[in-house]
Amino acid sequence: MNPTSLNSSTTILLAILSIIGNTYYWVTFVNRTHASARLSHHVHRTLRKLHFLGISAWPVAMILFWNRGTDGQLTPSAFSQQSVLMQTLMLITGSGSALLLIQTIRWQVSGKRCFERCIEKNTIPLPRDREGTDFRGEPEGLGKLFPWNEIWSPQLTRKTVCVPANAASENPSAHPLRILHLSDLHFDGTPGTDFYRQVFNYCATLDFDLIVLSGDLTDDSERVPLLAELLAPLLSKAPGTFILGNHDWRISPDAIRRKMMAAGWIDLGGRHQVLETPAGAVWLSGNESPWQHQTPTPPPRDSDCLKILISHTPDNISTAISQGYDLMLSGHTHGGQVVLPMFGPVYCPSTYGPRYASGLFRAGSLWMHVTRGLGGLHHLRWRCSPEVTILEVSRHHSSAPNR
Ligand SMILES: [Fe+2]
Image (tube, rainbow, N blue to C red; front, side, top):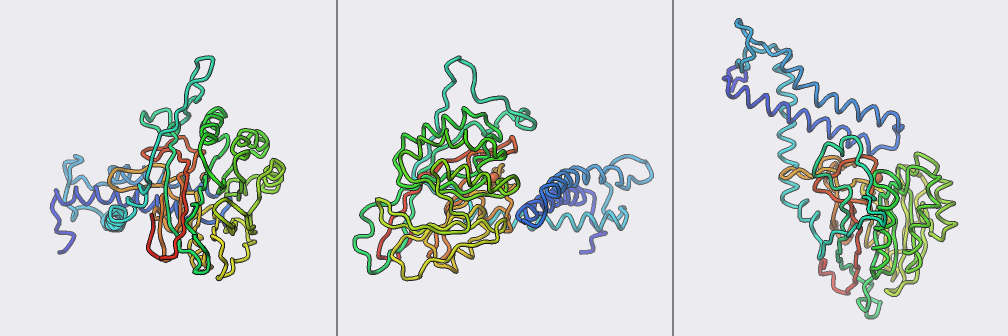
């Protein structure tokens, strides 16, 4: 069909698809560029502003430059009456709607299942403090305007995975490894200090064998001693490991590492360590690429250990697969920050876009857990509450999948 022959009602539909598609392209652009370590924080911030401008400017431009015909009214005049430039831009941006449809189908078919794959989900109770004032602080910026903001509604999720055990190991499933997976604390990003204190104290009542912090600990290295103090009840229960994320790298990675190690945390950035746990020996590696170029030694293929790669970004999944890890633990995406009812997660700084926004994913013999994380610098989460996970990893000789 010749597009210039489209009538008024089809033109309205095309205009709507054009606005939706334009939004999709800008969000995709900002997701992909934020996955890169080559651009500075300043450039990232500028691109973020540009994407807001691009999303809001296009509908305005359509109104301003819409060919209104001889009567000058803003009527849905046919596509053929628009300028060639307007027609071209409408078709280009409209194609984004088709890509969004493909992404939505993928989310509905598999992503949603990964997102929700947990055996238990509880909201962590956050009581008011002793003085009776709401300790959760004031939402700022966008969060203030949004009544369903979930940044102060953290959830504890329990998830289970089963990974194949080495044929030589005896009774591998005797004791599953219980990992407390925390990520993207962004201490003291959005919620106040008491938010973290309450959440960590609640976590200290749980049973776990190992703690993993998968990056973005803070946005202020001066706050690390206080963060370590709040985390101390957890560390008294099990060994704690950490790597750094892009936000830590942006400020002072060496200072953060030094202070965390001084508080008793094991630094796994660019290295590995074998830890003895009640579930047996665990090979733990930390991969901070693309922000750090030093990568850990891959585990021996015939090792009897459970092999875990901690990577801030899920983008290192192909490395985890090729190097024979059993499990990868990530964060970074904040679950998409906003999860739209039909379309799924929106903002994910990943080369895969929202594909690995949050949840449990299986690729060959590898399981990957991506947590939504606990904090964030942006003051809005919708249908994407902060998350703390207890991940139970059991091992069986059979290669039968999961749970
Ligand atoms: Fe983060």
